Length: 300
Ligand code: HSE
Image 1 (spheres, protein in one colour):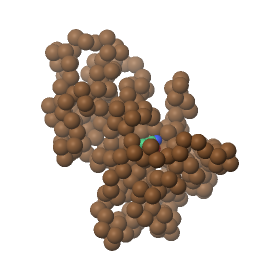
Image 2 (tube, protein in one colour):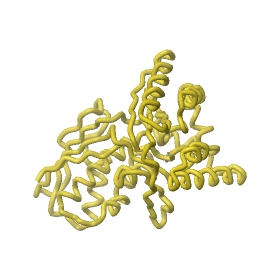
Image 3 (tube, helix red, strand yellow):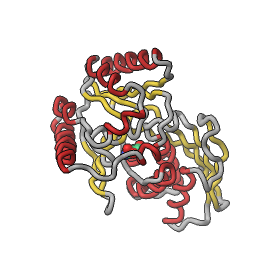
């Protein structure tokens, strides 16, 4: 009664859709190995790849806390789980690291219990994990990590999550500059009110992006991926953000922006080769300004 589950990294916001859009990449991601036990309660026997940053205490770990919420909801206080968490992606990167772990854990638990309800029934529990990780239960990482592909959170109350199509040729180039940007803090610096004229620009862009995803209009996708609300504030937390954008666009990117709350940045491209050229260019630049980095290229 042991299962191994992988859940992927995700790019939340997708530039213009703060808290409402996200997509999953193929890799990196996290792996959970979970064992069903007949002793009530959850234990975490092992965490690797986290440099000792994550708590083994099940009351403090987002994976076990979300799984416990799930167990409570289905009234299973008679059983327990032992969890091994293998982090295979950087923490605090803006790539949905906590979501990948939480979703892998929840999916493992659901499968071990033979619970055949649809996967998105797990979303509220995964959102509890997000709330614990950064103070806010947004779904734009956990929903795509759970459901795959591109996802729209049309509404939070009630929760209404919609899968969106996307042009198959799109690639995603991701670069994680090794600086610290905790999501909790990156949310605190955002302004709470917006100007109507900025809201008009933003919802025009969100609608344009969704329209482009449906029709496969990559130019429309590119020109819609602009953010006048959040990016101007968060860009300051990312080394040479605007210069990196210029470099990526020059190298053939369709669009460029912050992944989630950063510091990772991402670009869409029309092919894999361009995505690699962009990560190379950005990593070379970061090396020059003495900042370490990691890069990933994935179809979306
Ligand atoms: N929508 C969230 C934010 C994603 O931008 O704060 C965090 O990964």
